[in-house]
Length: 256
Length: 233
Image (cartoon, rainbow over all chains, first blue to last red; front, top):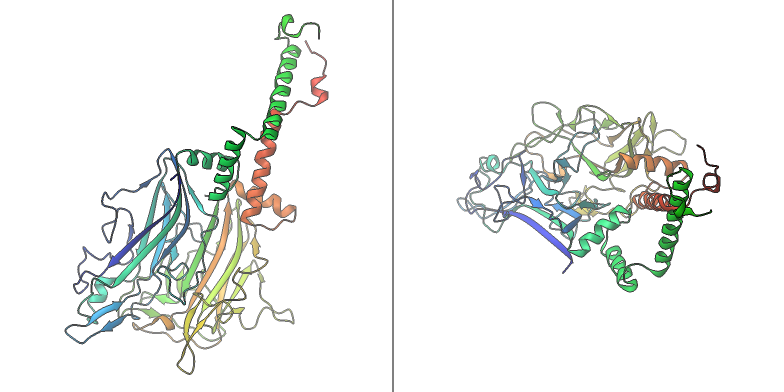
């Protein structure tokens, strides 16, 4: 299992209350991590994503729940049991690698990220994505990865408007989706080698590299011959250089 | 992170106090979502137009940056988008005057793709972007030092909505571009000089060639002139 397509999702559901619980719902305009933040389904250990020394990560897609207006919600039932069944979070999501944000605005200042309208999750029939994370983002060994979301519709303040009585635990309030390929072990080494040669790290390119290594037990015959020739000529060049510089002994160049 | 796919999104929302909101988006809540109105045929700059979310200064590229602007989209369909670089406007009418409508309309490039729009008959129509699925072809290349931006123009008067703005009433504009900076900017310059399209794939290919050449150059024999040079004492 050296190359694995991974998916990480974060979701925030209703708490069965009226929406005023500030320990359950993040406030509008605040940025939180989907890995270790205080809200929603985060990792039990609440750690940021650290890429280990034998791993290589290629992030291919990030998305979040679409919708802007806090007035375009859907409520069913009658008072005092009006249930909020659909909510638009007005959210953005950003990638942070070590201390660098991926997204910046046209004045070169860090931006909040990509919106759910541009890159929606979960997708419905009418949702056609406008945004693709291309080129993909490489996260190298020992780098930390964080994915942060910001909601611009404040759920707690909205609850104060009195438009509903209950947010059921089945109502999805916000969601984030991250899709990436995890290379580990020897595949991570190959991924790093390919990256250093400027070759895109894809499942295909890593598998092809591995095939090349296995077929020729090291190198392709042609490539091996090429490098052998180059190394021999380099040895010859060094020898002549030492002779020209007067560093080589007579026994090394004889009567040349 | 020298090749990054960036996006900028504009909405005519405000925090209720002023007409614009700088460097971010206003926090909204139920019965507190305000939009800012503007007149028909009045161009509004999405970066510095003083309506909706804005930034402090116009978009201007640094000496080590290139931008490949490949997509723009708007909503509702009555909104149009015009891209400008310096003093030139991208969309023009057949008589060579910058588009009088204000550029490409939301019928051609709806945002989001598949957006539901309530037509005059009250029915919801889902608008799909078919013609520009790959964005503008060829894309617009903005070079170091150039000033650029996007203006939106509505073909109808857009009324302000106080507190009760719904999804359909919010005017939106989406701009997507590839930001090339740092060492990749030099590669982009060489590609442009050679007449190659500025794509992620071409930049990668050029860098691969560069690596390969340098790898071989380090191991290659010296030219005869150097090798056969007479010994100098």
